[in-house]
Length: 359
Image (tube, rainbow, N blue to C red; front, side, top):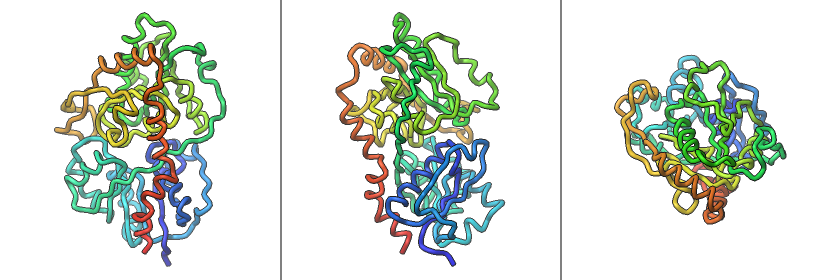
């Protein structure tokens, strides 16, 4: 017989953003001492992220929460319809990364009772197409303890150099993440500066067509990190940098931006989409943008939609400022923003909503 708690369904052991969403919500349930179970769906990187939870059980609970895309729910329903029909409540923790939700997603939304999402940007896109209860409920961004690995030494970067960092996933569409603009801005900024470097952390590039990176030049001041990193090593990578440079065209949330703030990096970022919920002039160096219609093939299911075209000139100006003046003025506010995404802070904030599902 079902019990009061949550069944979390998604990519629990995969190093994906959606997998991290599941693990982050599990940390809230742990904090609130609410029991839960996990259904780990297979991916090409399953098993790479271990977890251990005190309140994790093998019981069947009243509420199913799906941490995946709406279309992923539709595919799962075809194979396991009972996951959507058996529990009292079904919740889709959904992401979308454009301002317009495609009409073909609407049947997927109807598979769940309620929709949760991480930012007002995403919430607005769902609410425009659905009358279901849709809550903006951001999840924790959990920091591991640093291990102490010296990425500067490994990559041949002198200790006192200025280092910019950007991370992107080959499966998240390069057009949206826009690392090309990051490289362009860095090359222009560092044209006559020999003690500046750019680290690009590229996730899941195995089995990808290397032609997708044809735009990436071989340059002595651009360093690549392509291996899967454990959480502690990821913290070490952040701490090897001075600033995080994100010229994304659109983000549903922007987890790496929060991680950069938590690790006290200066943040240069497009002032658009999901991150607008938590970045401003007090904690980041904002890059202005112009709206642009998506071209055919730039992003799946995006016909007629728009996203941002960030100003490379702005990004270069911010890089020059940080190189010349260092990073102090926004540091305290950045750390404060990062703390607002800790598990305890968000668990206390959303405890009434979460516990309302246990009545």
